[in-house]
Image (cartoon, rainbow, N blue to C red; front, side):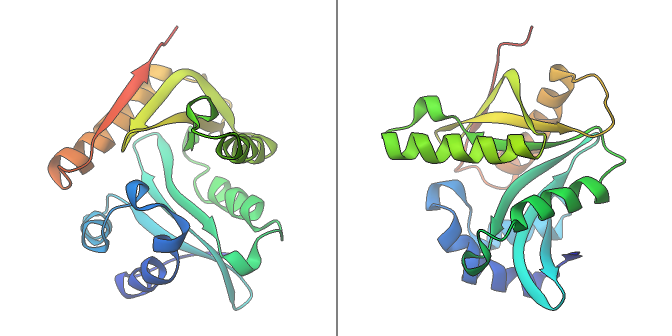
Amino acid sequence: MLKKVDLKEFKEIYRKHIIKDFPREERTTLNKFKKRVTRGQEEVYLYAEGEKEKAYIIIANLDNYVLVSFLAVFEECRGEGIGTKLLKEIETNFSNKKGIILEVENPQYSTSQDEKEIRQRRIKFYQRSNYNIVDGLEISLHSTIFNIMMLNINNTKIDKQEISKELNDFYTNIFRRYDKTLSFKIIKNIK
């Protein structure tokens, strides 16, 4: 079950999990995260089974899509199928949207074979949950190039221009308004 968390709970998630789950160059400071959550730009959820919390997810609720900014299963709960269950919960809770968007590091730009294999496994995990790479659309965030993957919820036509615009609007608002130290660029080869 998903539960939206308040700022106090979010601070605990950040301190206990986010800082060890994501490299420094892929996450922002707690204060900048708090601004984004307080202003409603992102929402934070915990996934629990019964009373046991097992994972968290940070999303941006865009106009027509949901962008998964961060998703992680607690280390002691990995290998239990929690990630798949969490993705299913997001799909159910946001069934009114056209799709759910993920950013996954592009294996082609890996700096080692081990890193490339990890990135490929991550993509395969999402593909097993019916997410597909949106061909011709990548994003460069924090000097890392990400593939855009999407779960098409309502079998609508994938509109790369619309996805690109919504991502651009979100990141322009976040990075240029609140976090000028970070940069992004949407890389398009839309056909």
